[in-house]
Length: 184
Image (tube, rainbow, N blue to C red; front, side):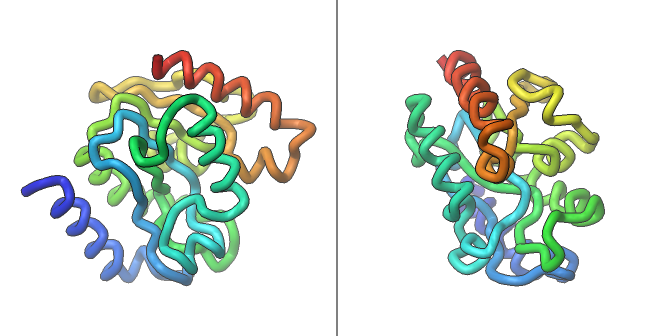
């Protein structure tokens, strides 16, 4: 089975999954980009704009992320963007149970794409991909784990940067400079 069919099958599973939709709303946001991406960006969960469109990172945070991706010399069409939680949580931040369940779909996606580098955008992304809590403010800007041929790079979530620009904007930009060096 080719990658498109495999990813379509996962999208169908997500669309039919009652657990994925419980306590959440909007369209499923499975992810988008190249299924041959060497770099995958993982966020938290869809926001309102994403839940309306079914596309990841298209709101304010998405504009910042996508500008940073282009700023380090990548094309949006060459990366893949997704999150562990595929629907908009009704109560804000996803619960640990939501993240743990969504991990199942996320890991299937990573197996299909087989990236060399996964960029974890914040705590929920790290918990979703690595099954452990990570203190992002202390550990961002570095590779935090390597397994199965994939390196995991931790940075801040763009929403945190927008909420607290004086505190995080320079750190976020510095992380993306490190990311550019890792990619090249």
